Image (cartoon, rainbow, N blue to C red; front, top):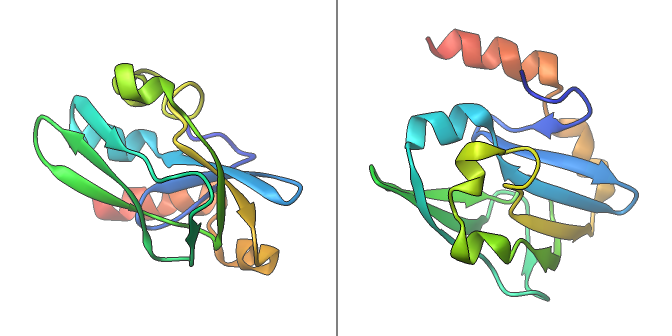
Length: 127
């Protein structure tokens, strides 16, 4: 089950918003479909992204997959633990497997994201 407090995209990113910052990762659905994660190419701290731009790349035993910025902002933290343990994304995608933290430049964009319930409905429609 996807955490209720998070917001989601149809590209299978999650975002946990706290004040003017948000923590981002890929959903359980995404990591299950990618398979075993072997590398996460994290962005540099200080780099800015607009919503929809490629934020990072996740590589698995099956493929490489772009992860998009669900919101516009500047990178203020990255999960360095993924450099030596990318499998954390598979083990705990909503906790230890988080990827990037952004300082938001346009908080109003959060209104366009899916709730956990809306995301669950979307996932069900893909089956």
